[in-house]
Image 1 (cartoon, rainbow, N blue to C red):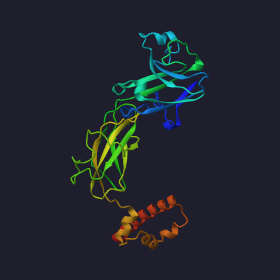
Image 2 (tube, rainbow, N blue to C red):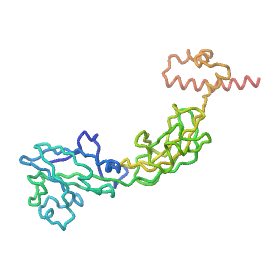
Image 3 (cartoon, one colour):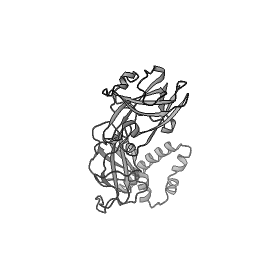
Image 4 (spheres, helix red, strand yellow):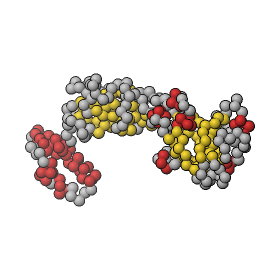
Length: 315
């Protein structure tokens, strides 16, 4: 018999959050999922003929002797404890076990890492049968209800045009990155966080709209922000379970930054870039080039035109 998370759970693996190596993967249940008491869809395959119940117990470890009847029957032995019983179908059984069914009514108060034993049984809370290997399967699930500490932002306000980079330091811990939130009207005209804005230092993050980014530099898409108007950017640390820290907030300012060729063309009175390119025959030179090569050529030509412009002014 075997057990796995069903495809309805997004192929997600739930594993311990105490990883032995940085390369280990897996996503524990989060505090929000615990509070919402989500159902965890499980599929048991190769359920033996004659099975009518799936008995679920949790052991202190994967090595716990839960299949032995006397161990389960001993109420003073906490190495194996009864969890729940579900109706069985042969040869495949699908069950929806809620977080509180698996981890208890007070599940959201303490992080936990449990190995669950699933037994092919004919009675609920069976303490009289020694289950064989064919009648037993295990699954390890972690629950992480401890959000990480908040990051710290280096400097600010930050400026840019189409994109703006914000640097920050993440706290120590097993993190997957940082969520970035933007409030276009979250800062005052003086570049201070507006007390009435949706993003505030030390506050809980919005329930949606975060852009998960890796590393310790966030790239903010400023294409929809107004020029010369401060906007608020909130950042949270995100752990393996997708728990988020409280917000740390700074202000960013979108400013218009012209490229070399654009600046030169404007200095010559051109408002239309195509007209400027035609004047200097850039469109002919770049007609047979791909997009990346054309852009490279334009940048290099722009720099050359600036040099020529400086020389003509000197003469």
